[in-house]
Amino acid sequence: MLLNSLLRIGLFYAVLIALSVPLGLYMARVFSEQRTFLDFLLGPVERSIYRVCGVQRSQEMTWAEYAGAALLFGAASWLLLYLIQRAQYLMPFNPQRLGAVEPLLAFNTAASFTTNTNWQAYGGESTMSYMSQMLGLTSQNFLSAATGIAISIAVIRGFVRHSVKTLGNFWVDLTRAALWVLMPLCVALTPVYVWQGVPDNLNAYTEAKTLEGTTQIIAQGPVASQEAIKELGTNGGGFFNANSAHPYENPTPLTNLLEVLSIMLIAAALTHTFGKLCGDRRQGWTLFAAMSLFFLAAYALALWAEQAGNPKFPAMGIEQRAVAGQGGGNMEGKEVRFGTIDSTLFAAATTDTSCGAVNSMLDSYTPLGGLIPMFNMQLGEVIFGGVGSGLYGMIVMAVMAVFVAGLMVGRTPEYLGKKIEAREMKLVMLYVLIFPALILLPAAAASVTRAGLSGIANPGPHGFSEILYAFTEAAANNGSAFAGLNANTPFYNLLIGFVILAGRFMMAIPALAIAGSMAEKKAVASSAGTFPTTGVTFVVLLGAVILIVGALIFFAGDALGPIVEHFAMTSGRLF
Image (cartoon, rainbow, N blue to C red; front, side, top):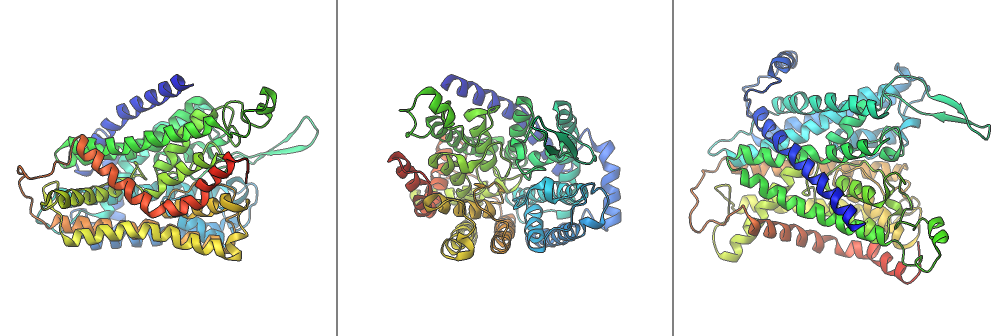
């Protein structure tokens, strides 16, 4: 089993590196507006978009203008998606004649999909028409992901440029991210999914007779085209309620591998884009190494917990263990096609990024197996993270790391030739403190109110874990779920919707402000006293800072949920 796990993760990482490096260098060319092999095809489309929208591509923006444009675009996207859901019963491509989405659920879903979160408090095949799926959800999968990439490029420019006040043009970056990066990858990947058996049609659902003589409704629709951007954009919203555990979304081992690779591909590639644009590719490799250490550790711990299973079952016979779902570790809530190895790899990939896709049910994981995905998100969007948001989150933590190093050695901290001063550190601390506030405060409110407690499916610490996970994924713009929580209530639709919006924009604004401040600084030459921000030493320091901050903030909450549940399980008590 160990050798099997090592071979799979080794092959997966080799392919990830082989694909992410050239993609990262390609994106560096795209956003520095150098020539690419797609210019002849996409250049006229880009220019037409600018003419129609009145965009002056040469007019750059300050960090505040850039943030304002992102907020304005997010607000318009939210309103449009909300209206599409409310009016879907009037629109074509609705063969099942689904009615309007309920107002609070439409608010929550619009907030979720326009922020790259894709949390779903509904079953997709029973709630959304084909028009809502295509025009509303899939388009936002592209646009929300492109927004994250655009903001990350602006943050990179802030650290690379000097003695200027501008970070680029949001509308140009948004357009190029969608046209040059996301669209070509999806066009290449969608036919592969169709080839593997993922449907992509506008047919009505099929009625089939079962062997027992009953009628079964088999849902289908434009799935493959949404599946591609769902993973590549770290969106995660499933066309079907079962998400990537559904055989129409994830039918074969090949599609499972492609989905996990897609989830991590662009986020990993952006580290190499960062290294290329700042003129030192070692900087990108350093961030990639720090992210990889956390990812591999999370995968190993989750896999150990799930393969160990429940200690209550080893005394059983083989047949009893199989009935209990413990024959190959904890198989409860997992597809037999994927087992514990591919299920935990998928869980690690989706929670180390901000992708809410799942191919197993996290609510059925062991307490420690469920803790790992939650803690991945509690560290912030830094372990690869969402497309764009993961990179600028890691850059903010790198600034904190060099500040800590400066305190230890008694020198002025510098990052990429820029001095880190009081203003930047205030913004870094604002960035760091907003995140836990968005998780712990609403989780506390949900844990002591009737409206919050009514949604949990399990009593005791597991129920608390369901609540804590819901707000963790919302603040991290992840979108996955413990699944045991009934979140389709007015209380959770409103509260989680607001946390989702705040988790996107209240985190992006300080990051852009830091970039704007750094862009105004003059670059200073490195000296013997400059702390190196490449190499093993900095990777260890950066990882330690991230881990300590996350552990100090969230240990008490995790102790009340999955940790105490683990000790209860070892004593024979289950929740």
